[in-house]
Amino acid sequence: MSLALARTPLDAWHRDAGAKMLEFAGYEMPIQYAAAGGEHGIVAEHGIVAEHQACRTSAALFDVSHMGRLRFDGEGSEDLLDHLLTRRVSDLPVGRVRYSLMCNAQGGVLDDVLVSNLMTPSERRFHLLVVNASNRGKILKWIEPHLQDYPTVTMSDRTELTAMIAVQGPRAVEVCSRLFSFDPKRLKYYRAVITDQFKKPVIVSRTGYTGEDGFELIVRAEEARRVWENLLMAGRDEGFTAAGLGARDTLRMEAGMPLYGHELGETVDPIAAGLGFACDLQGRSFIGDEKLRQIASAGPSQTRIGLLPVGKRPARQGSSVLNRAGRRIGVVTSGGPSPTLGRPIAMAMVDTADAKDAEFQIDVRGKPVAAVPTALPFYKRK
Amino acid sequence: MTRDTSKLHYAETHEWVDVGDDGIATVGISAFAIEQLNDLVYMDLPEIGKQVQAGDEFGEVESVKAVSPLYSPVGGEIVEVHGDLPDNLDQLKDDPYDYGWIVKIKLGDEGLPESLMDLAAYEKQCSEAG
Image 1 (cartoon, chains in turn yellow, purple):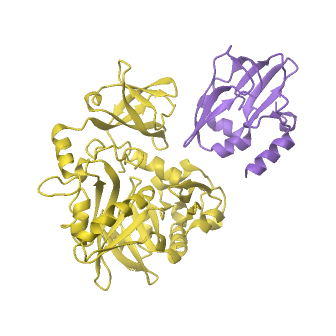
Image 2 (spheres, one colour):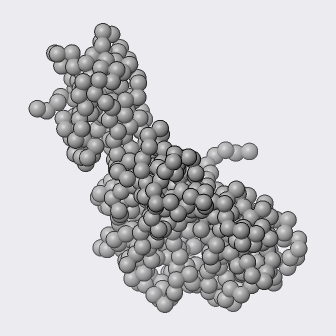
Image 3 (tube, one colour):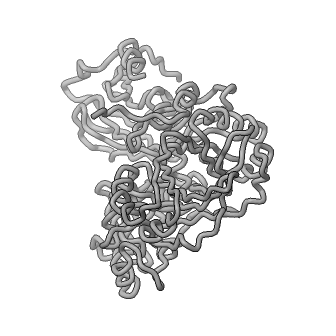
């Protein structure tokens, strides 16, 4: 078995741009980019905060090729996915995207996914499932035995044949409208289309993980660098920049979005994680449905909340959350400084009985820090 | 005053030390370390009067993504802390050797540890770290 880390099709570009590369989910990924390098369109001011702010004020490009892309072809693929996902797929019209969970029979979250129903220009219909990089192997293994119940369905892992680029920010839609033969302004939120860029196919999806408007693009691996450079070039005057996983994390935290391994895991149910909206429990059956119905009617034992630690000291994942009496009632699942708010923010899973308390304490490496609950998300675009 | 970085001593963990004639060691962190940390957001300082051994953790500095302990490069008693520094981390970045001093330590009897490096050795360590 090879332990070598995988590289995305944009790997050479990241290295040329002086990115700090770190292992993430078996891939070497850019965490943040270096300064300088005008030829690469990198902002002069560099680092996670600068990349974060570029996304909030202009737009940022993220290489998210590590995310798993699984394609389902054939009659009945919607029925297979219906059985696997907490949300209905059989009524998903062509061109629509849905956020959903995949659960085990105990209602624990195996992954959170985006499922799309897509039509090729030659009118072949297929479903696309985008899964977390860290869960791709597990999800492939999970789905495999179910395929025999749907003999007309084929699953193919397209991850390594393709690249995925997110372009996110208030200027993203306008700039992208110059690049595609299809006008992406016409694409509504959570819709996707297969179009082309310079005659090469691209899946454009109006989705993202930053709290900003924008797109996620899937292209053939060999087209990745060209599309990436075209986007940076097209947005150069608008201040587009490449951004790494560091900024991606602070952006999604501000947007109150869960991350698998933080807010989500196999011991967490979607109701506790605040994702009840992504569970269609009425009149259908899927893996985990009974357990989720029980949890939904009894109420989850834990609840995800937003916290504002008082002062400047960030509370990180794993810090205990205490109630006023000093009893441990939960744990910080994600936390760090918010570049937009200029203060620390945190998400935590706490006992439901205490979730409505007016004040909490977080044990930050042995030192108590007061924290005030706040509604999620921390940041909402205007 | 401008501190001459070629006259300072450096720890493997990126703290610098400037020992005055009065036996007081001024301690900070190097420009290289600050550049690596990037986007500093928080600093935790010790209490005045605290006794430290060389290698003890005396505080923390946090960037957006990481928490890094600050290790005392020398042993002794903390006699002064730069209380304004945590609120002015931008200035620490701009001026790590003068404005950016973190604590002053009255050197203990053992003096300066032999493991401290001069500038040339420290720069070599940094270049090897890439």
